[in-house]
Length: 443
Image 1: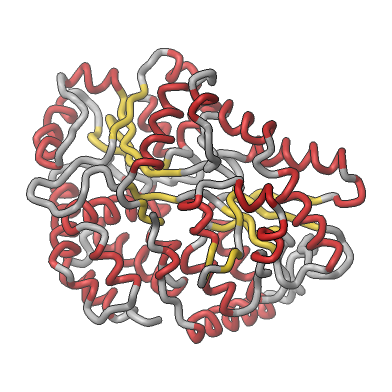
Image 2: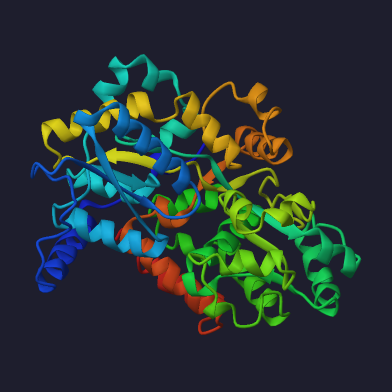
């Protein structure tokens, strides 16, 4: 169960962020995205991420629009980093799309506090399909104060450790189960001609996956619970300092690909380093599997991809079965949508999302949707081993931690990514990281 519903986000922080976004938009001399479903009569719209599940989304919207010509929804797709900036600006300016793609957590809470997204609780309560469709633990991520403001739109997305079996065989090593084994394997993998880990440092958010798992493995979930609760000096917890010390130890040992600060995730450059054998391992979200099926299906057919949980830390208090990542992505409906746009969006969420065809498309793409009773379907798919692993990993995790940049307020999330980038580049030390992040508590 994620702890996102316990995350505290201050209204003042969001108000300032929305005001800043609106000012930035005004300074650009534009009235906002013309396609936004803000009650202007242009029809319902949806914004989402390119890559990954884009094909499933496109097929779903195409099928919906063909069957419901009077309730058409126009989708637009953006790269990850571009989307996050664009949607924040659009919401702040009151010009969002009808269907807002999100992750739950602190940003959803911020939208709720500002009255930017619609309360879907009455609609979910009245619609048996929506009420019972999703796994309860995943559906809870779309709730704020026990009210539903977002519904899952794609697969569960735990972060796993991918590895290249061919590189491991050449180096004569086995998949690591502890961080001690990771440190011991670094020189062996480098001697085999591969960087131990691929890392898209330019994108910054992949750095966060290391922080989330190491802090959990060392100190357990309570460490981040205290951070999310805005407890004073929570970032100075010894587990955070130890995790960041270990990160810099890995940097010093040459664990990450040379020039990692110029590698991007949006272009899947980090994934390419894995399947071309330039890197032995990649800590990334499960969404990379569907991407790999398109980018290099032969790599999968040849059986060269392996995956394992994030390694344990000797003496750590965290459960090695704990998972970090995104429970799923979600659709919220803009409170600025007209009545007809909102109806189209609600009808689509009820009838068009996670219907049998939609679920089948996700499974065919190598993704596991957060719906109940999937076990029997997993064995008949093209990727039974992968899908079964992800379903079990997410379902059985003692604690499923939502990505920190989504669980925290926008202000804290931005500061976190900035300071992590500096930490990995060794521009600050672990103590300075903690000092800098403690200054964001409550913002």
